[in-house]
Amino acid sequence: MLDALTALTRGTRLVYSRGLRRYVFLPIVVNLLVYAGMLWYVLGHFGGWLDGWMAMVPGWLDWLSWLIWPLFVVSLVLIVFFTFTLVTHLIAAPFYGFLAARVEAEATGRPPLDDRGLAKTAVDALGRELVKLGYILPRMALLFVLSWIPVINLVSPLLWAAFSAWMMAITYLDYPMDNNKVGFRDMRRRLKARWWPTLTYGGWVTLITWIPLANLLLLPGAVAAAVLMWERHYRGLEADTAQGGPPQAR
Image (cartoon, rainbow, N blue to C red; front, side, top):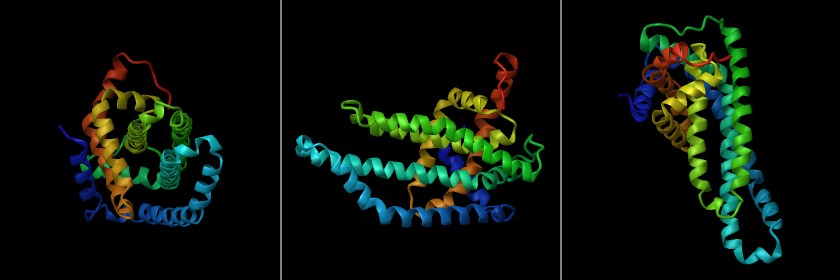
């Protein structure tokens, strides 16, 4: 049984091997530029955002400022984290899709089922990222609102952790599935059917994204790991769909 951590270790070694490392350069440069720009912007505005949010707290809640202030900080950090993640993947999606295809050919000895050309693959990858955004953003907004509801906000860190793992699983495991003509709805069905590998993989990738600078080097390994996870845990579910499941639109 291929576990998520083993897949990430193997995937990272694989993308930096002689035949694949040249495909990693552009995603790293893209992430580095976005990372630097986001860091510069956040550092310049974080204090103002925090002061503005604290100014909206009613006076009769001043006695709770010791609790409200950390909640504001955590919320802002989470917003910045998710924004950075979504922006980087939107920009780097064509490179990651192509990297996933090369890794699959290298690791399995056969190319993906996708027969699209490079240019069409890049354009379709951006469209697929927009589909992901349409799925993720409303749920992220709902979770943000729930984080401010008394009692529920006590468990909001756990909800954010689970959501982060699910979001990362969708983001990365979709690259090999899209390359193999698996529709977005079908992809989510497969992830739910193998929920434990899905969440453990997404959880490890979430931890990687929180490592400053090192994440730029490790995230391409997460793409390769997604290919290995696809091959081991999700590819075989295609027969289940063909035999009894409803057809899924791409």
